[in-house]
Amino acid sequence: MELGTKEAAMTADTPTGRTLPVVTLFESYGSGAAYVGPKVAEALGLPFHQQAFSSEEIEAGETRRENEGLISRVFGALGTSYGGVDVGDVTAAQRDSYELTMENTRIVLDEAAQGGVIVGRNGAFILTDRPGALHVRLDGPLQQRLERAARDSGIDLARAEKRQKREDQVRAVMSIDLYGWDPRKDEYYDLVINTGRLDLDTAVEIIVAASRVRAQQPQGRGAPPQG
Image (cartoon, rainbow, N blue to C red; front, side, top):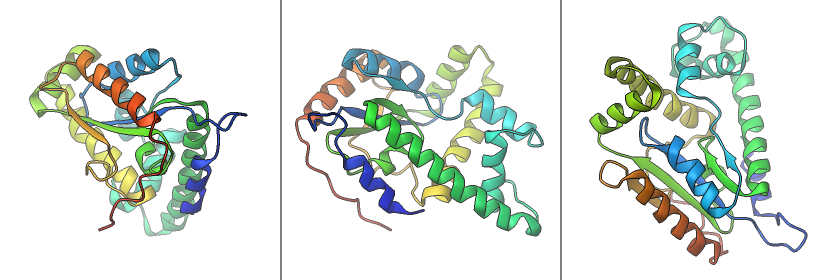
């Protein structure tokens, strides 16, 4: 990927040159982003930008890969890292990876220009140097995450466990393959919140307060160390 496209994230969003606040969220499955994200956006008076694929779409995309559509292209692009592809498909997978990366980057930069809360989409990596942006990862004990996901999605624990194993792996592999970073590591985040120890409304309050502080510190933070 041409990482130079990230420079666009530094440009002014408004005619006055003021950058709009941005919060990026990444979660381990069942950590509460579907609740926290919209609440943070509402409190800040900003748009909410949901992640590219829901749990249901990832589940369907793996079980019915023959279907056409973006999620099928993603599984194909992951290729040798997730599920495997035939040797003859490697060139097509590489092309799809490049196209998916560029398209996702464009979407994130467009969403950042509007301000708001961006869930997933490698936002913390793409917008790492954006002035005033706050990058947050939600996590928690596995059992609590499974119970929350099962309750919120109306599914049983066994299905939630299958989704967790699949989804946490797929989202990490997508980031590693398409952008070369691991979203499960903390280098790119300003906050890591354990929603097993803190309730979701408290998490919202913390993120909103931190975003308002971060918005007053417009300097870039510099790229995290590599390796």
